[in-house]
Amino acid sequence: MSGRIEPGKTVGMEVSIAQAEVVAQCDVDCIAAYPITPQTHIVEHLSEIVAEGDLQAAFMPVESEHSAMSACIGMSAVGARTFTATSSQGLALMHEMLYIASGLRLPIVMSCVNRALSAPINIWGDQGDIMAERDTGWVQIFTENGQEVIDQTICSFKIAEDPRVSLPTIVNMDGFQMSHVIEPMVFYPTAKIRDFLGVFQPLQRLDPRAPAMFGPVGIPEIYTESKKAHDVALLNSQAVIEEVWARFAKEFGRQYAAVETYQTEGAEYLLVTIGGLSETASVAIDELRAAGRKVGQLRLRLWRPFPAAAVRQALAGVKGAIVFDRCLSVAGTGGPAATEIKAALYNEPVRPTIVGFIGGLGGRDVTVGDFRAMIEKGIGYIDRGDAPLYELVGVRE
Amino acid sequence: MKTKLLPTWTELPLGCLVDEPGTAVEYKTGDWRTNYPKTDENKCIACGVCWIYCPDDSRRLVRRQKAPAGALYTHYYDFNFNYCKGCGVCAAECPTGAIVMLPVGAVGEPAKRDPAKTQEVKR
Image (cartoon, rainbow over all chains, first blue to last red; front, side, top):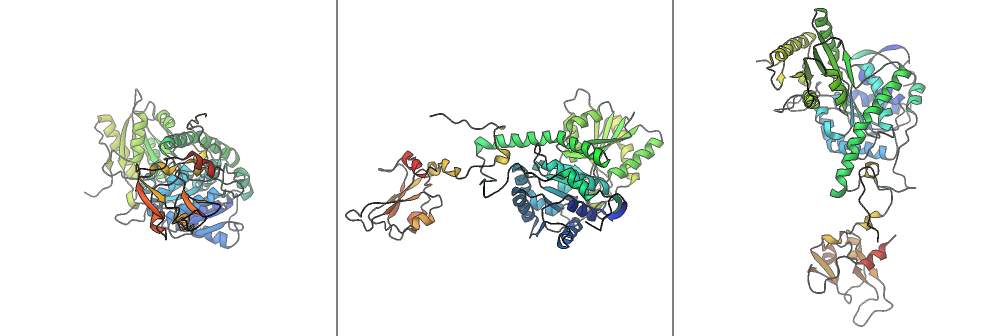
């Protein structure tokens, strides 16, 4: 941290290293992690920062991701600001513990470097891992570049630890195409970040002086009520998330929104993207706009809580939307974003046609040209009204 | 006695935290059993093996002034039927064979819940 980064100056740095640096700036107390490609550089660098004495924190190298999340749950329960990072199979191995972290309302922050799930074994970028964890009850935020990773990592601690939220939070970035790319980024002064976050004040914690138990049995008479409380807390977190983003904009100068729009004015067709490929898609939008096409882009930043009202509002009045998912829900009804957007719109009196494309799986490149072709094809489906349930693009026939 | 209503979703503590220690005594697991243990007070040597093995804290030492006629020891262990699940570990481990397992509903079965014993473990 100190000496390695120069706040206020644009620096070129690998995004994973930058995230480790900003986590240190956020003054975490505890880190438990197990290395997995493409998350490795984040925790490797954090362990260096701790070993060099630049961050007063406990770094717990564990024997699996299941143990990593278990350790994070324990450390967060004693009131420590806690961070971990994982990818793919590691996230899948954490699966059952993710529900426990959120059910116990522990504000752990996790970086998820999105990678495909086996089989076949594939270490490259894809959102299949996080989409399998949709229902774990965590706040889930997507980023599109290194600067957003820095910003959203800071915001995530603020969101998670807000007493009105008190829920664990995942910051997603695309594997390799973001995590391993050297990008220009600007760091903020550590004191300013720590001032923004304040000291973590847990609402309740394990303390021998005031005995309490986390994780009791929830019998049938209790379980439904506990799930209702969790659901309402996650739904209500959206207002706090937006409040944090507004405060971040005021203090750090960059504004974020649950659903972000690009070139949507007068657009009849919208391309909806989520995660790192959104920027590539924006270039396709620019090109089509320059050619006089009435197209625009929506980028889903907040995935949980799902910003249903914002999605409805953003899609009101358009002829159709082309949703690009980087995840295949095998033999389902479409990609995760497409199906959820459809569900959010279904009861609207007037609703646009939704075309779902799936691509970029397991690190497959999706170029500007690919997005242009998808938009053109999608517009055809929308105009003719013959869109398939979903379509996998870029497949060799 | 005032009936305590179950909490609504807004009344549940955050993450269902139990902020009061020792509340497990309020959950009477005695309702679960299909077999119940019976102690032969005269055979019991009060060694406490059953107390060590009992997974649910349902063994209680009963202190007597002196050993009655036929009894080996002054004290003996009896059950707290509020919590005994009838697992039979005590009967299997008892070195003197003082404990036998009998089916629920057998003649002489103690009450499923024993109000007096609840008092005994009250914090």
